[in-house]
Structures are given as C-alpha cells and as structure tokens.
Image 1: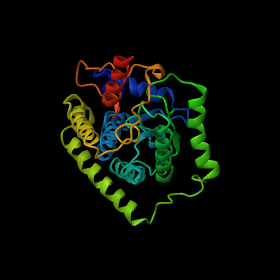
Image 2 (image 1 turned 135 degrees about the horizontal axis):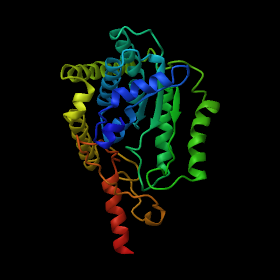
Image 3 (image 1 turned 45 degrees about the vertical axis):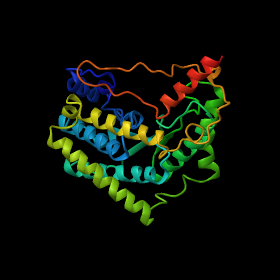
Image 4 (image 1 turned 135 degrees about the vertical axis):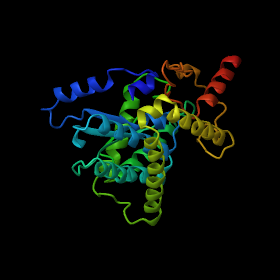
Length: 305
C-alpha cells in the first residue's frame, strides 16, 4: 500500500517482504501484514471496490509469498456513515477471506479485522457533528464484527492532536462497550433479511471485480496500469456530484449549514493537501468529500475579515 500512496514501486518489494517474514518467524502473535483497505475508502472507493481491491492485494501476497500464513495478516477497512451497508461490508469481508483461503489451500483461520472511522465524511464546519458520525461508524464496525475499532478524533481533519478530542474519541468506544454492550453478542445482525441480502450482494459484486483484476494480472498489474486508481477516481467524482446535488447529505455542510460559523482561527492543518502525482503510476490520495465546500467557505471568511 505504501507504494500505491507514493506512486512508486520498490523493485526489491518481494525480496524485502520475505526477509521480514524470516525475521519475525518466532513472533507468533505479531501481524506482519496489514492490508490498509481504509486507504481505498478515504480516497473515494465504493464499498464493493474497497472489498475487491483489498482482496486483490491479499491474493497478491499469497501468490508471491506462498509461505505466508493467514494468522500473520490483519485487514483494516474504513467505515462510512452508510450504517447498514457498512455492517454488511464487515460481514462480507469475512466471507471473501474464507474464499481466498480455500483458493490458496490455506488453513481455515479467523480473520483479524480492524476498523478505522473514515476521514472521507469528516468535515471542517460544524465539527462536533463528526462525533455523531464516528459513533455511527463505530457501531457499524462493532455490529459487523471488527476485532479492533480505531475511532478518529472529531477534529482530525483540521487540528493537531489535543487531549479533549482524543478523550471524546476514546469515550465513544468505551460507551459502546461498557454501556451499550456491543461486545457481548457475536454477529447480532445474523438472520436479518436486509443485512444478509446486502452482505450477499456486496460479496458477489466485490468477487466479480476481484476476478476482473485477477484475469488481468493481479493487484500489482492493476496498480501499475492505473486500473484501481481510475476506478476510485471515477467513484469519488460521482460521490462529489451527489454531494453537490444533495443526494448525499453531510449535516452542517450541505444540509442545514450554519453560515454564521467561523472556523478560520480553528484550522491548524493544511486543508488544501499537496496532491502526490507518482512517478511510476498514479498515487492514491486521501480525499475528504467536503474538502471543496470547506475551502470555499474558509475563503469567504478570509475575504470578509
């Protein structure tokens, strides 16, 4: 994933990977591979794309390093505010994981699944709404069966780390665990017709796209030919159009915005991110959905200052 984020390919990629596997062979509980599907999510991938590209990356590892054991792998997925679809996504990845293990004749090993609340739907204006978003996202991940949930700070998109924001993020997990008992039931959505149906559809859509990638040489070839990047760019543009036409709602941004709110003095991080182009192929860049709206509103603030 690091090569995809930078847009350059390390020619010693697989040799270095094998060396790492040799060095950590005695660290039984250590996860030497973390497939960051969350990066696809934050760049604007659809749910099916995030699943398929994650799966293709997993297949690439197994193909190039046959000795790699499943218990050394962790998969990290992003979470959006699409509540039921995200529950289904986390259930679907476990089905797809089993499919891949069977294909490569690996031992049946439970997937170690990490969830990270996505930056994709994080906003600058009305930032406390981000706490509601991360709560919904964390609930989806828990109900979907994530082993670990990383809840981002509500102001992570525009402010340096601070104690209050980090405490609020921790409290979301603690409330869901200690007060709402989200950790007490395994797969509580099992048997729900709607979620089961979504799970099956997402699994099939992701598997179809995964097979297309495999038929054309696998994940690395798909990255080098910009197949993955182009698909994500196209979906991200579609999401932006839906936001502009209010088919997608972000409370406080394109739905009931507080136009009197001033945020310029609160912003500590660069909102206009430097876009990495990439030398060997297109780089994958994090792209918040509301970034253009946020920039326009901040510019108006400066003009009226």
